[in-house]
Image (cartoon, rainbow, N blue to C red; front, side, top):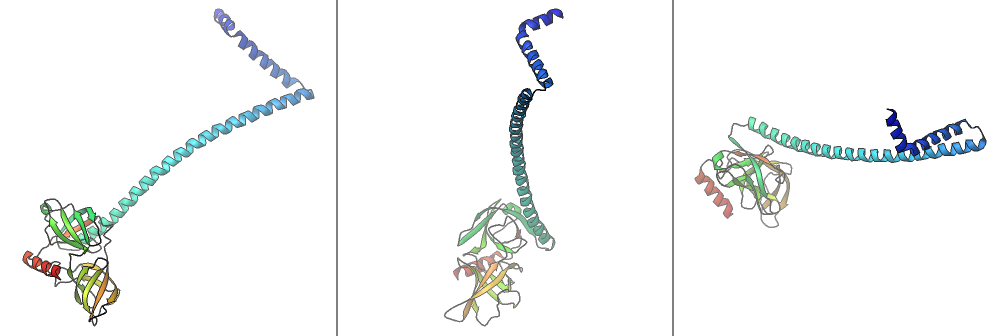
Length: 277
């Protein structure tokens, strides 16, 4: 043990002497009551306090910076979670509406998701992930809980193409739910309109438009939209009735295909007749 302390003294004697002298000097300064020594002591302790304060501030700044970074990360994670929950909420609301629709109808409903959209000004179509294997056929109406979207135009084994109401090639027979007046509705490139409506017919803004039982394409009443106005035709005795559809085609994601097709011969005949008009 003595040999260890001797070796320690030989290796670090300069540092040991320095530390002892510093301690002795500080002790002597603390006992000295002269004004000059007091001033030196006050200056030394003040400088030490200032240095300590700066070091503490720098340490706190580093801690605060790290804490801010952690909080920003937490906020970003929360934003992603909230966004995901909002998306789940929107989908849940839509799916609840679809389930409620399914529960209130005895008609066969084939569920499908929209996998692509082509929402041009004249040839608006959507593609569904349900086809012949799921029982989807050309001529079947496509709906959601808000109303009618369009008609199935073509199918493959697993997919189907739907002409929406905003497709100039789709024309269907509709009815004013209040006045029971029938008419032919089509997309004119800018608006959904009921054409060739006599000016004497009782059609007013705010009236609900549904599909007519006169149609063999859509043999059940389905909600279409609301009358927003009448366009006066400058010549003749007819008006065009503008209709705002219930369905927002740009946002729809989940739909049902109404699994009914009456007579394909009747459907083709009516489709060809409307397309010639």
